[in-house]
Image (cartoon, rainbow, N blue to C red; front, side, top):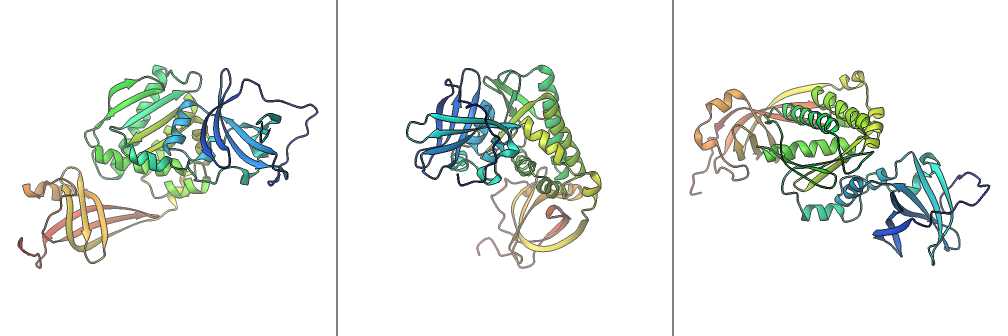
Length: 377
């Protein structure tokens, strides 16, 4: 074998259950490389990770996987490596030609060499592209329980829905934006598929993008610490509560919006809770503030939603919220659809708040620039 395996001795040969059959090939490379398998009651994700010197024996890792987690893998909502981060996995040797099982070990994950697992942060090849080609028509949350994947109790639904609302609300407040309560428009079968109504899809997607970044950092202590350090304390607190809810109720959640998706299993939630830094560590990240005096063009403006401004001198985009005093003084022509653009140039004052690598912006003042070209120029 090419990797440094340290598998326990076997006093007797352990064969794979003859009922475990290959169901779907997700990736091929000189033969199947990533597949799903099923038996009478369970589903597994299997990956070819090694071979012997002769090339006649191929070693696979197999880990249990739920229908919802498999959907998340196909959507690019979860890195492949996370699917194998289970307490115990099966290591199985097969003959290359007949694909017959030779021997099997049921072992804890820490006995699998790190370099035998998928690369950290790697997704199923092609999944991100397929996702962008088939965007979600509306925001959706899929919920599945551990004991019954196709059924979620009222208690579980209530607990998860309330923490999701709190988390989305905390994100909105940190962006200085107002988000009306999320509402359910329909349920669908399978995992509990909750179709969501929001009066501000653009803000929902913006929050969703921040949520995805946080989720993808949750499997590593240092990455999670770096991801939450610049966040508003309300987001830090509600995300911790959300993880605790998923862990206690053993519910997994797949969120979809536009061209993005993010998945949190109860196993990931448990690891993230263990990785969560203390409040003292978070408090050490300094917050700085400044006001930038800029010249540029409004590319979008909605007084109740925010602004999009392009700085002509610094070649930088600023997307943020509008101070209350400015909103109240705006003339009607400023209420426009994001992305249409105004031909006039403006001088603006934008408040910049920095915490770590994160910046947020608020428009404090504006006036037409003296060098604004006429409509005919």
